[in-house]
Image 1 (tube, rainbow, N blue to C red):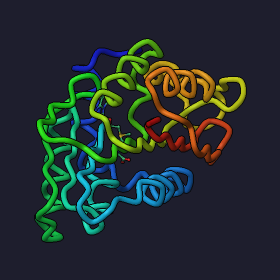
Image 2: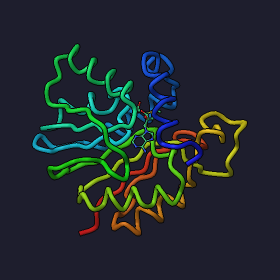
Image 3: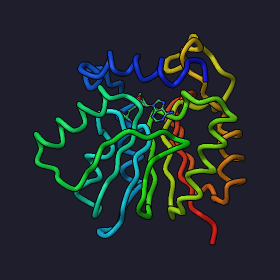
Amino acid sequence: MKRTREEHAARFDEKAADYDDTETDEYRTCVSLVVDHADPARDDVVLDLGCGTGAIALRLADAAARVVGRDISDGMLAEARRKAAERGVENVAFGPGTFREPAVEASVDVVVSNFAMHHLSDAEKRDAIAVIAELEPRRFVLGDVMFFGDPDPAEPFYSPEVDDPATVGVLADALTAAGFSLVAVERVHEQVGVLVAERRA
Ligand SMILES: C[S@@+](CC[C@H](N)C(=O)[O-])C[C@H]1O[C@@H](n2cnc3c(N)ncnc32)[C@H](O)[C@@H]1O
């Protein structure tokens, strides 16, 4: 992790009000792919880690029984709650939680995360993926900054001073080690992708 959790939280608190105005095409593609691959059933509980202002959680709410969003930034969570209230979405609950301590009590069927896990170091990502596996979801969909080739700070999506993305290989190994099978890899950009993992029986 290039910054502490508190520094990341403060950074996103500052961005929260304008965050939704800064979407790129690749980000939008990732959001669509994560939502499509999550594909929850009517009675599923979905957990969105690093939920931010609720881009994924609010899109999935209609399809699932309940969506739980967790984030470290009070500012981003406040925006997510504001949007849920404005849209009359009642089956989402946004609250504090981290990748490694997601603060969920009930069982979870599908876990999603978009553009958030790259703030963790590779060792922390491995721990986070192991924690997600312990929740025993049948599917985990990860959209994020990730390297399909050599890291290139001159290309979009990778700012080495704040970001710590992994290679696709590191993520695939971590998922496999935690008991998931990688069932789809979507390359959105040389430095952005979506991985779909299902828990092995
Ligand atoms: C770029 S935003 C993405 C938000 C949302 N998932 C989306 O697709 O728009 C990254 C989010 O990850 C959160 N975050 C960073 N580190 C985190 C951690 N360790 N645990 C939980 N959330 C974290 C930040 O507070 C921020 O809201």
